[in-house]
Amino acid sequence: MYARINITPHHLVVTLMTLLVLLATISWGATQGADTVTVLNAEKLSCGSCAAKITNALEQKEGVVSVEVDIAAAKVTVWHDLKKIAPGQLASVVTDTGYPSNVVRTVAKDVFDRETGKTPQAQKNAGGGCACCNKNRK
Ligand SMILES: [Cu+2]
Image (tube, rainbow, N blue to C red; front, side, top):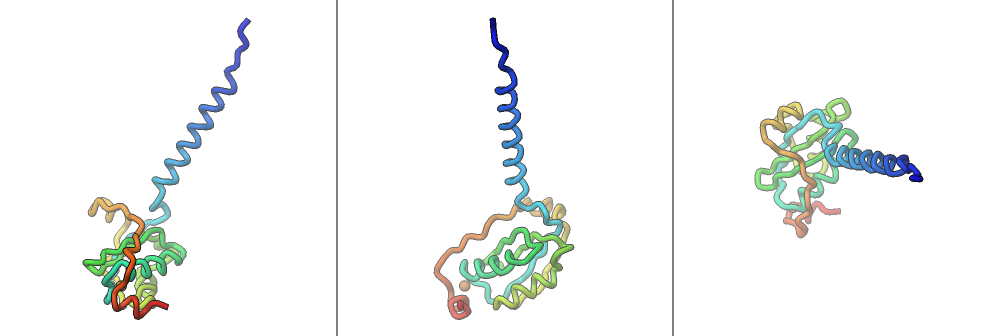
């Protein structure tokens, strides 16, 4: 006689699949919750440490999903939820951090992503610092 044990393996597979789908959803969802992309300029932004300060300040705000800083261009790109935080508020956060900032443009996230092929990456702190951010450092 064979004992039919088809419940446990089946359930194991289903559980594993569910976990995999969940994990995929979480990683794919890095910019989920953002419906808008706002590009800001930031005066005096000149090194990775400046970039880290700006990123940290923005990411503390509700509605900010992801931040990318282009040091060479002195531009800050913010993926955010427009219902929770407006472009002007983002510029104020950057200005208050010590880098006078204005909104360059605001577009829907899918438009921006299609246009640029960009996906946000975590800003890495390059370490060190320039005269500007060392002076501003508290
Ligand atoms: Cu700096």
